[in-house]
Structure formats: structure tokens, C-alpha cells
Image (cartoon, rainbow, N blue to C red; front, side, top):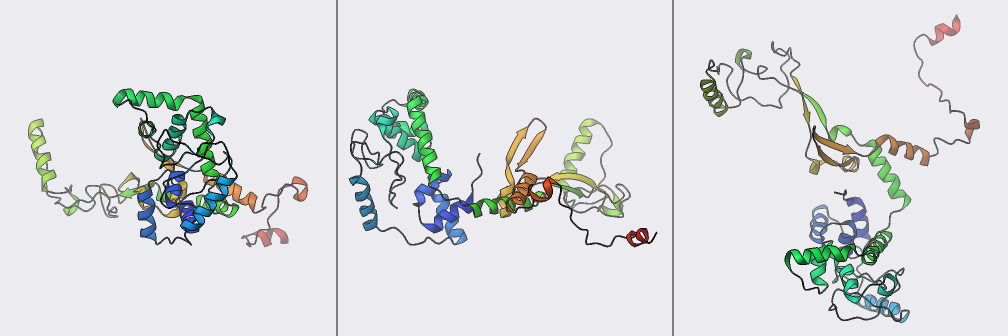
Length: 336
């Protein structure tokens, strides 16, 4: 799953240049999720677009366009009207989930195929878009037909164009890129995975005997020993073992070193910079693998942006940085 860029979403949300529905669609998140997050973190929308200005903008666009089909979410599949050119930005309102205009003739689409493209861009679900476009097949047959329509080269090309047009309307300036690099380069990898030394079972047991979590664990072990025909365990170490406690430096069993444990924290609680570094998790045959973005690469790009590696300096020779520290023995070498 692609990572959600909440900083970019917040920036666009506060600017009020797109509707909340359009922001949600462009970033692949639910409308309700953005509303909840805005309420939680106190995002404030700028000046809203009024219905009067929306109507005026729509009239301006309509006057410039002829002989093109518009795809709007309030139209029935068999109805049509006017549309803006494919490369022209569309108007959006607070009451519509998304409005994208395409020229069906340019892609060789029928009216119903055009409707499918529009509906798919709203819900990103083939079968749901298929039904809303007015197709009649149900169940497995309908799902198969939806996949067939989606694989149509003309339909697929129109969808790809529309998605690219959506992304092009989202502002992402040079400062935003630099902030991304800084966040990735300076994030603490220890927030994503930790190698910890934790106590052994004898660290905090009474007189360093084996310590149990609780009586239930002890009784389970006692029952199992009876089944295995082995001596029963002892509870002389008491109860209350906590698996993530620190080692006891006086423990005679582990010599105060405990044992190592790999810990993966809840990624929902990561700091903003750690979320930038985090690129997802993958289940492999050897266990869970945490994926990260390239910190060294981000640091290199940031240094290049700041002009720290200007190859035109010193005839492409490395830049020598004077050591500001007086190292022991330096003066003695000069005197000799």
C-alpha cells in the first residue's frame, strides 16, 4: 500500500484550492478520514469558494467548449452535455465528489465507457463503477464484465490520463521536496525497529529462581510435565515476570546481560519524520521485514541541493575541510 502523505494533504486542505472530496480522491484516502484528521489536528480551511463564483467559472469554461461530452456525477448514463478540453482543469464544488472532463472521441469511448471511467476514478472499484455506469450484469458475471471493460485499451488509457491530471493539479513545490529530504535524512531508524536487551526468567525471581508470569502459566507447565512424565517445575522464584523489563545486573544466570529481543513498534504512533522514513512492511519466509526509504540517498540529494558537492570547485578535487580540533600529539610532531 502506498504511503499517505498527510503533510501534502494538510497543505492542500488549508489552501482550499480543491474540494475535500477531490483531495481524498487524489491521495487515495476516504473523505471521512480527512474530515476526522482535520478535526483532530485543528486544520482550518481557507476562504471557501462560493456558489456564485463556481457558477461564473462554469459559465466561462462552457463558453469556450463545443461538441464535447461532459461526465458529471449527477447525470444518468444515457445523458450528455458539454465538456472542457482534456488538458483544461475542471471546476469542483463542495457538493460533488469529483468532476473530471474528458473527450470521449479522443479516446474512442462510448458514452457508457466514459461514464465507467468517471465512476472508477471516484471509487477505484471496477464492479462498483461498472454498476454505476449503467451496465446490467450482476454477481460474478458482472465482475468479469467489469474487468473486461477495465482492460479495454481505450478505457485504460483514459483512466491513466485522468489520474495523471489529478496529480498535476496538486501543488508540490521545491520547498516541500527539501522538507521531505530533511525528514527522511534525519529520522531516527530506532523508531522503526529496536534491538533490546531484556531480563531473563531468573533476573528478578526470588533468590534468582525461575520466575513465572502468573499462576496460570505455572499450572499449565505443571500439567504438561505430568503428561511428559518429567519432574514438576518449581515456583520458588515467584510470579510477576515481565518480558520487557531491564536485566538485573546481579543475575547469576545471565550475568546481567539478559537476552536480546527484536522489537517492532506500532507504526501508527511514529513521529512525523519516522513516518517519512517508513516505507511499509513485508511478510517474508524469514519473518517480518521493515522497509525504509534511503536515508543516505536523501542526505546526498540534500547536500547537492545546498551546493556542498560543487564539482566545478578546485578542478574537481575533493574539498579539504580544516580540522578545528587540536588532536593530542600534533604539536609534538611539529616540534620534532
